[in-house]
Length: 309
Image 1 (cartoon, rainbow, N blue to C red):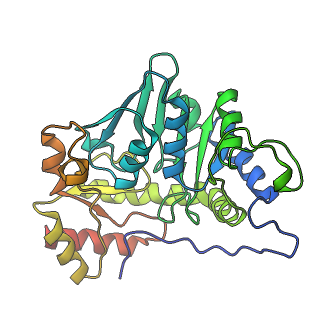
Image 2 (image 1 turned 135 degrees about the horizontal axis):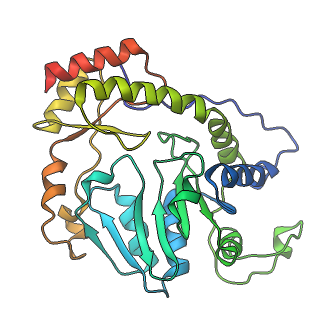
Image 3 (image 1 turned 90 degrees about the vertical axis):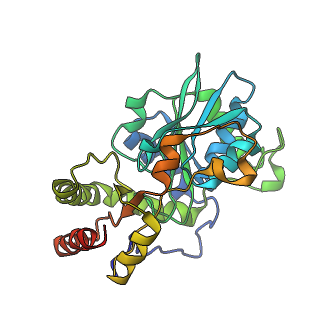
């Protein structure tokens, strides 16, 4: 079976002196990641869902304009709802596989959900107040889940450092000696999470180059411009049946994503009819798109698409 995603194979060594939750590797990874994406600061979090929630919670007193493409994983909408900000779904199926603007403020600027897009200096060039990244196992910088918030705003960064550690501050050796400044969250990036994601960051340039080669092979046949390194999406007449036919041929495909505004639990969020997304929801399909594919794999996938479309 040619899998839709390539799960990382990483060996980590945890010795008797390794702090499993707050090892120095976490701090090292935060510094290295901030430098790579072009941000002044980076704060690791337990998931990108928490990155979204914490960022919007910090800014909810501001005049935020929060728009969600309706074709998203439900965890994104859930994090936004729990943050308490006002928001709405928008008709933007073209974002898939790339970054998108999660929220905007006329003073602060943009908050970018870059969960699926990582490149050199990407946080620097998008000019955002905060850029949010995911280390979910299927993402380009994969890990044991986890995420990162990159920012140039020192006040926000200092708040985050306390927020992810249950609202505590200070460098006391014992957790019970750290003063609690506000009711925070247990939302830090753990040592094991940082070890895995850090190792994948080291290999990302090489893997990204291979993904670029695969993109070129696909694009010669499918005649589309792909905008990211996580998903390669094509249109078919009906995606569920197409995925079933591809599976019979030994190729795993995916549907990214269903329209959330059509689900009953999100019906009260004022979306109306989002025609482009509703049409795309039944047509878009993600093909295998990762550095583990050989040229022979890609040729076979292309052949299977031609037979199954």
